Length: 343
Image (cartoon, rainbow, N blue to C red; front, side):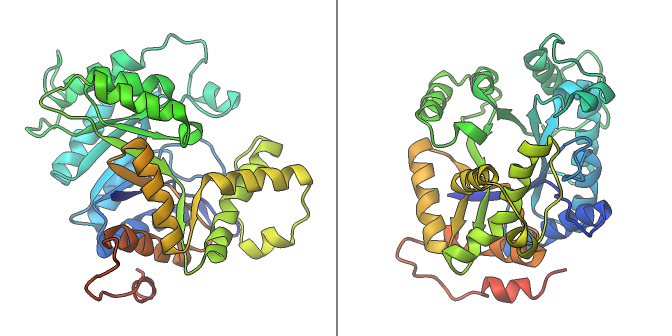
């Protein structure tokens, strides 16, 4: 089981948005230090709870502070950009950090109507995602009508962030697929991934690759991990009330806050969709997920208010999937040891 991280540059109350971006870079440094091979960042526009609207810019900073870990976008929202411009950005990243860059691509056009207006997007606009993917691939591969610069002999790997339609499109184009959200844990997902592998049409000797993305948090015991997940669950529940996705809050403030029965139900529903717990609990749930989907990789998109606890969770997650089933391992520094040396 391969594991990787998707950092959404979550903002926190009482802390500046700039600190969220610096925190993403620090988390990438820590992820490389403990042994992760892939670290992605996100693109969200005008969302109070997320500071990262420009993945390419953030990845340049991440790449400058790291030397080995793969860095990528999870993802660039292609309907908001011209394929040539995306190609130029990621070819520049590839030139600066050769052999380390991934490009995940999604189709979101913004969460709210005011954001879509600011982005000059209309929900009724003609769908061009498939054509744009092909055009972008041609630019990255030097096969387009014009040559994107800087020219590169190495193709930047593209991944499709998929909904129901996207899984089939990834198979048709011979691209890796990243799936998450409501499809997880459903029979529909298993059937979609079976079709993906059956219908996969290789491109330049590509082969099927499935990444499952969800929130994973690990702590010393199940209850501690559940409390780590509470800030994100609380933010999701509040967004359903207010229509605005808020910054993360400390667990203690959330536990003391008044709430309705409806909010409690929404919090519990979100907590049930995340994978949280002690190492043995998390490992068991991930093994079940991988067994049911045949996934090649699990990408954790988890966040929590306590950044030190998040770094420790990252280290524990990597440790638990690295250990063989009989738990016989060569002694190594504990996650707590690693957390004490955070940048």
